[in-house]
Image 1 (cartoon, rainbow, N blue to C red):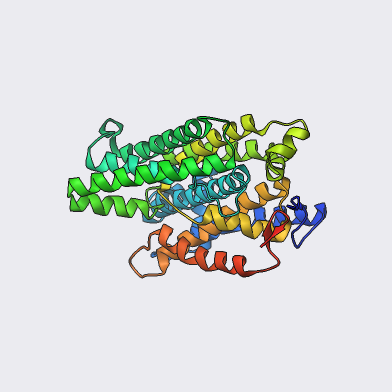
Image 2 (image 1 turned 90 degrees about the vertical axis):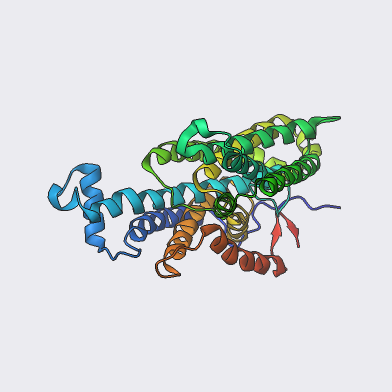
Length: 361
C-alpha cells in the first residue's frame, strides 16, 4: 500500500525557520545581484557599480562620471540586464519544475518533460534554417521557439485527453511521444539544410545563453515570471492535493482535471518566455526543487517561494562562473549548469533518507 505524502518530511520544520529562510534568501539574492555585476573581464569596483545604478535609477551622482562612458555602459547595458535575466530565468525554471513535478506526480519531472523543449527547439530550428518568422526581425528565433513551446504543450493536452481524461501518466506518454516527433523534425530540417553556420547557431542556442539580455526583453519576462510565481503560490493547496492522486482528491471534493489543464497552460507560457529569452537551460527546474524539498519538505506553500529564490541565486552564480571560468571566453550556461546539476542530482538519488513526498527511495 502506498504511503501518503508527508508534507513535513524535510530537515527543517516550523514557520519561524521558514520565515527566516525566506528573509535570508531574499537578502542573499539582493547581494548576489549587486555583487555579480562587479565580476567580469573588466574589473569594476563595488563603489563604481553601485554609483552607476544609483545614478541610472534615482539620478543621484555625477552624470559626467556615472551617466556616460565605458563603465556606465558595461554596468547598465551589459551586466545588470544579464544578471536580472538570470534572476528571472532561474526563478521561472525552478517554479515551473516544482509545479511540473506535482502535475505529473513524478520526482524526475522538469519543466521540459512534456516535450516543451523539443517544441521550442523545432520552432528555433525552423526559424534559423527555413526563414520562418523573419517578420519578427532580430527576435525571430526566440519568438518562434516560444510559439513552438506553447503549441506543443497544447497538443500534449489535446492528445492526453483523447479517449479519456488526462492524468499524469497520459500526460507523460503524450509529452514523450510528441517530443520525439518534434526532435525528429528538427533533426530532419538540420539534415536537409546543410547550413554549417545555421547548425552552429542552433547548437549554441540549444546550449542556453544569457548574453542577449536587453532591457526591452526584461520588461516582458520579469513581469511574466513574477505573475506566474505569485499565481502558483496561491495554488499550494491544490498542488499538495495533486501528490495525493486523483482518486483521493475526488473523495475530498476536488476534481484535479481542470486545475491540471490550467497549470499546464500557465507553465507552458512561463517556459515559453524563458526559452524565448535564454534558450534551453536544463537541470535548474529539476535540481532546485529537490534540494528545497530535502531541507523543507514537500508542502508547496513553502516550496514555491524558497525554490523561486534559490533558483534565481543559483543561476546568477552559474552565469558568473560561465563568464570567468575560461579567460576571454564564455562557457554556454546550459553546459555548466548540467555539469553542476548532474552530480548533485545523483547524490540526492543515492541518499536513502530522501524521497518524493513521503515515499522514500
